[in-house]
Length: 131
Image (cartoon, rainbow, N blue to C red):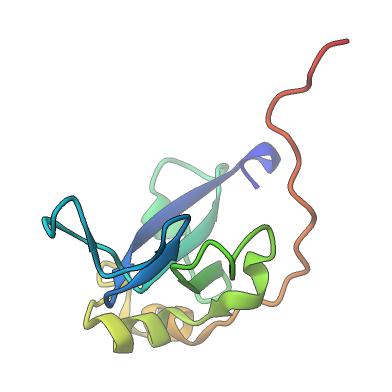
């Protein structure tokens, strides 16, 4: 999307406790000093780059919002992240956080309900290898 001259505002974080990595399931690492989250979430708001510098003013109820909540399990999530899409409102309920608070209430309410269903193309490499 950034290649299409759009800006992305992304917020992400952990949820819960206990994930699965290459050494199996863990609730903590580093001798108990670091909690391993059970899930990870991300919310992206897509904003056109054109139309001035005030990105907040460009976000309306029609803005695309991509929200995902994925288990922290390296065997469950790969390139197929699109199957974990949800709404920003669902992530709010699960985390206790509040998103879109700088937007008008009606716009924020509309964005919280969206579940993105735009088909997702396979990932493209950022750099092309030379022969």
